[in-house]
Length: 130
Image 1 (cartoon, rainbow, N blue to C red):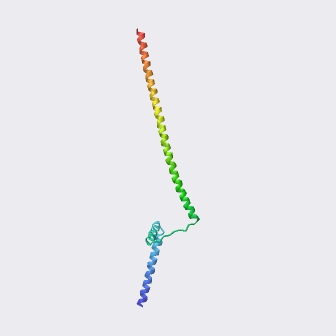
Image 2 (cartoon, one colour):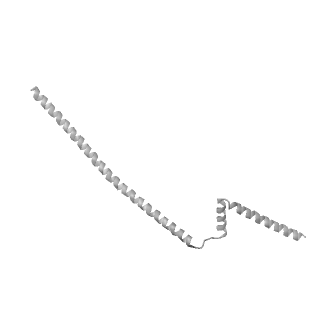
Image 3 (cartoon, rainbow, N blue to C red):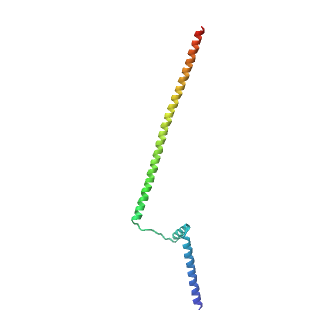
């Protein structure tokens, strides 16, 4: 009788522990941390899960590879564009430098003409007094 009770108690405890563990795992899988828990549990036990290659998987892998290749090309193109803009910025700087030099030369020429005009006025006024 004691052996039957101990067997029943042991069986009940086993079912209770199994139910608690099942409920705990199913409750954990309802949220995102449950997936992490199961992944850690699987890696601790040494379980690996994989999907056999099929048409969808291979197409998806090819698509990801092409996307990565296009991303690399896009980065290269944007780098080249930045280099070209840098060179054109230098050309613009050189152009504006020339414009500033031309403006300075024009202002100096006007100042020389004004000075010459004053000199001619002064000379004419001296001749009129004499």
